Amino acid sequence: MTEFTHFNNEGRAKMVDVSAKLETARTALAHSSITVNEEIYQKITNHEMRKGDVLAVAQVAAVMAAKKTWEIIPMCHPIPLTGVNVSFSWEQLQSGQYQLHIETSVKTKGVTGVEMEALTAASVCALTVYDMCKAVDKGMIIGPSYLVEKTGGKSGDFKRN
Image (cartoon, rainbow, N blue to C red; front, side, top):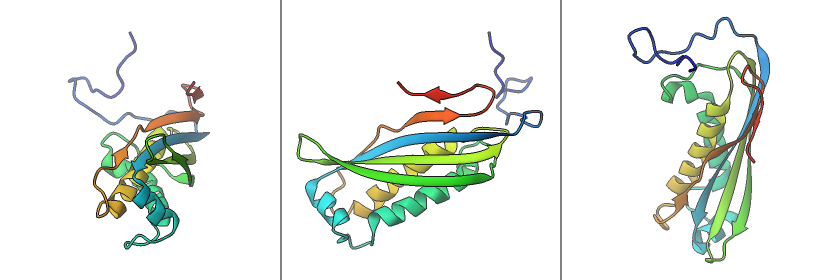
């Protein structure tokens, strides 16, 4: 059985010591989505939402979230990020609703990975869209959110099938 690295000798949670790990280039790509009604879709795409440019604000929120992940996820290390990017695409669903697909990519050169930073960025991006549009409809659906791929580090690369 593999040793659990997030527990100390007393069985209590601890931050993993990464000081002996080698610095490598690491990347992570995460996905989230938010499903909205046609009115919200039209207001976002036509820049008619009263709170402002929804996607621009959500993009900035995603970058900020990636940079602050260590402050909100208890066992995450502060990581010097070398890049954060956010991209959006729309899909019209058979139900007549629209799904905003969010992809976040995060990069670093360091001793630990950036999966949590990419996932946090994607999730906060979707939450920001919800916050900016909730006055129109509170029935929006967020998710799923998941890791698409990651590169670098001791555990090697991962790519979702």
